[in-house]
Length: 302
Image 1 (cartoon, rainbow, N blue to C red):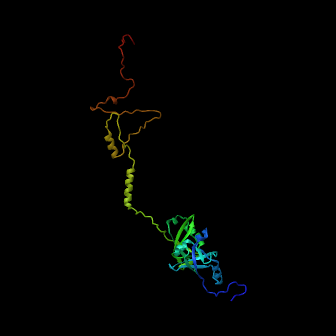
Image 2 (cartoon, rainbow, N blue to C red):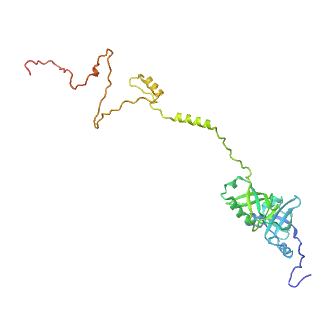
Image 3 (cartoon, rainbow, N blue to C red):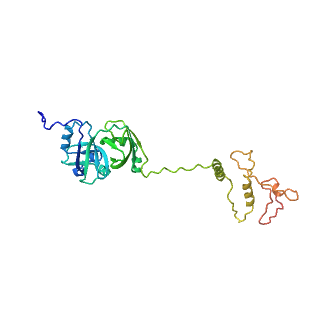
C-alpha cells in the first residue's frame, strides 16, 4: 500500500539487496583516479532507492560474485551515478574476479565483522625501499572499505603502483576496515632472497694469519743492496749476513762532542809485525820536509 508523502512502497525489513549488473572498468568514466586506486564501486541511482527502502545499515558493503568463474570479492560503494544496469569497478577488482568489459556480476549486500588483523605480501621487492611501509599502507587503505583473503589490491605511492596480496585476515575471511584498529604484518616480497651469511673462520686460523701478516709488515733496516763506484761487491755479503741475523751493531756515540765543532775520527790499523803503522802516529801539522823547484845556495844565509 502507498502511504501519504511516500513515493515508493514500504518494503518489509530483513530483505537483502541482490541485483545483476553489467560490469565495466572505471576508465570508462574518464579520469577517476580516486576510484581506480581504492576498494569502492559506482552503482546506478536505482540501487540507492532500493537500498533505502530495504533499510540497509551503514556502511553499505557488498559482495561481488562471478558465478561463471566462481570468484568473489567484497567492496564498498562511493557514488550512485552509474548508468542504469551498469556498475563501474576498479580494474584490479576486475582482474581478481576474472571479468571482462560488459560481463555480468552479481551484487549482494553483506554485513562484515570489523578487522583486527591483516597480513599482506608485497608482489615486488621495490616495496622494501619505502622508509615507513606501515604508514604508507595505512594511508592507502583509507580508500578501501573491506578486505578479502587472496585478493590482490593496488595502491599508488610516489607515482608508482604497488601490489599487495591479502594472505590473512581476522576475525574472518572477509572483514570491514572502516574505522577500525587493525594490526598489520608483512610477509617476504615475491622474489626476495635472504643475504648469504659468511661462515666464521676458526680462531686459531685467524690468529696464525694475523701473526703472518704482522711478520710480513715488520720493519727491517738496510734491506737494500749497496753499489760501489769501482763496481766491486766486497762487503755486501757481510751486510746481508748481518741484516739477516738481526739489526746491525751501532757505534759508540761521541760523548766529547762540542757545539759548532767538527771532529774527524780515523780508523787505526796495526801492522802485521806488531809495529805501529804510520797512520797510528799522532798527527802533527806542517811536519813534512819541504821541497824546492831549484837548488838554492844557503851558504852565508841565516
